Amino acid sequence: MENKDINITNESTSPDTDTTTIPHKRRKRYSGTHPKTFEEKYKEHDPEKYQDTIKKVIAKGSTPAGMHISIMVNEILDILDIKPGEKGLDATLGYGGHTSAMLEKLNGKGHIYALDVDTIEIEKTKKRLAKKGFDENILTIIQSNFADIDIVALDSGKFDFVLADLGVSSMQIDNPDRGFTYKYDGPLDLRLDPSRGTTAAERLLEVSIDELEGMFRENADEPYAAQIAKEVAKHRYSNQIVSTFEFRECIERALSFLPPKERTEAVKKSCQRCFQALRIDVNSEFEVLYDFLDKLPDVLNPGARVCILTFHSGEDRLVKKAFKRGLKEGIYSEISDTVIRPSTEECNTNPRARSTKLRYAIKK
Image (cartoon, rainbow, N blue to C red):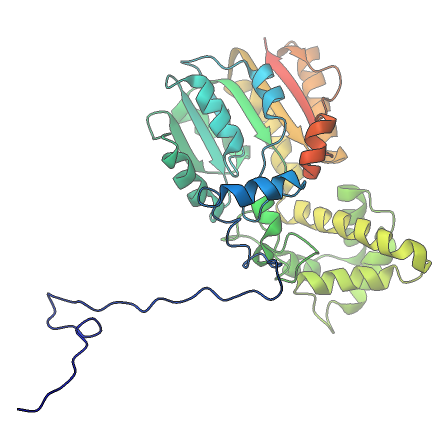
């Protein structure tokens, strides 16, 4: 009888006894001594497994890839003064850091409703919080825009505390596929909910040059709004702007008239402002915030506390005016006299906290 070598680990003997094994696929090695791209930073994407790496990244004043460091947690908890048995709303779930801290204050009694429009990150955060033991008995996560808090409250009832963090999460900014940053090449998307709506690239084709200039000026106080709008209008059809680098290059060309010594820093600042302005427009962020502030008093119980974190002057102005109007009309018994800023220590360990402004209000 002829001998034959049979590899039983790679061949199925029957449909019911499949012993096939999938060959181990080695992780692609990054070039150099340290990972540079978002995808290569595999340790930072797995914070529970590589805690030492995460601590080192944070200690250097950086945010690990795929993570978000929650801002002003202690200040928020002091103001909200959460007690076991209360019902709260995190209007912007994000990475879940604020939500987790508030849930711990409930000590297993009460409930928090958390909202987010991001179809990609909401599922990751749901699993992350579930691993911490926060199940549906104490936490309800809903994919919804926070402008719809009135609809949410129809099921939940009114709230004893509310938090809204209006910043874009670090995991959104750092992922090149989302198109939120000029630092990495990727599709010019900028949608908080990537499953619906118009992308930033499509938006640049729709608006007139005057609308574009107004967008940069009103949404981000861009001093070179006219020059950048003109440059975008000149190139958007012949060389359609579909990537983050193409948009950045457009801004660079628009500012080429500046002296070389000034140009590098000016381009950096204008990129930050114009990406912000375009993101605000794509996601109708001012309109959403206006609706949220308008509906907010009606979903609050007497004595309810509200904290709102903003990250640029336009947002802060809307919150300030709404709270002042509410105080004058007798809706709120107390509001913050001025903005509350993160500590110097926090800004040193988390530079993304530097532009943060916190305001609070207490329902009468």
